[in-house]
Length: 199
Picture 1 (cartoon, rainbow, N blue to C red):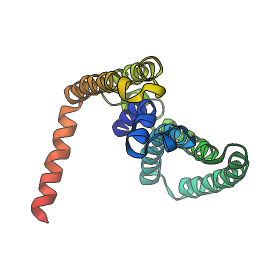
Picture 2 (picture 1 turned 180 degrees about the vertical axis):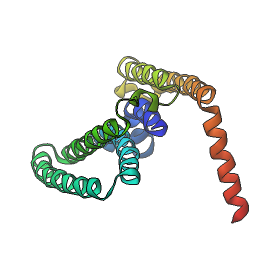
Picture 3 (picture 1 turned 30 degrees about the horizontal axis):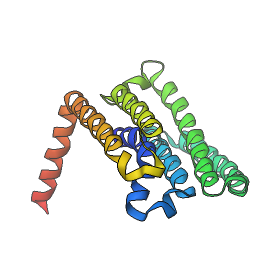
Picture 4 (picture 1 turned 30 degrees about the vertical axis):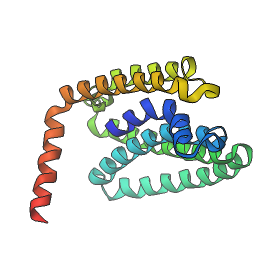
């Protein structure tokens, strides 16, 4: 979730910049920028689906798992129809849109299961990592920066201010995340160090 929120906050605003720096205006001025923007949004759906489905499959009984598999089969059929329809109308962006709708359907089903499992004693708001509000503000700020300061006709001249705003937002976001998720981050670092010692 944390990685997904970071990507959705900064990815769309810097997709054009990244492609322009790597491949030049030939690719950044085409469809590739829009596809990369939408894919950055799609990543958060992947994260949410992975987390919610993992929980469902770890606690569900045999009957619930069978029901879940039947529902996922239905969602797969819907996905195939959406895939064909959206790709014909919107190309690569349509493919990402179809995948996003599929993920949202699966997330919704898992969310209903989780609500019933905890019988109302669970809040999805508590799943949001520390600093999510700052990340959303950073996303809005960098989107504003790209629209107002970055001029595609004067890319090299206007890039520094857009990059500076992004770096400041990223630093502020990382500090907020570290402050709120310090214990969690330290546990990951310890786990990785322990893994390295065993290997």
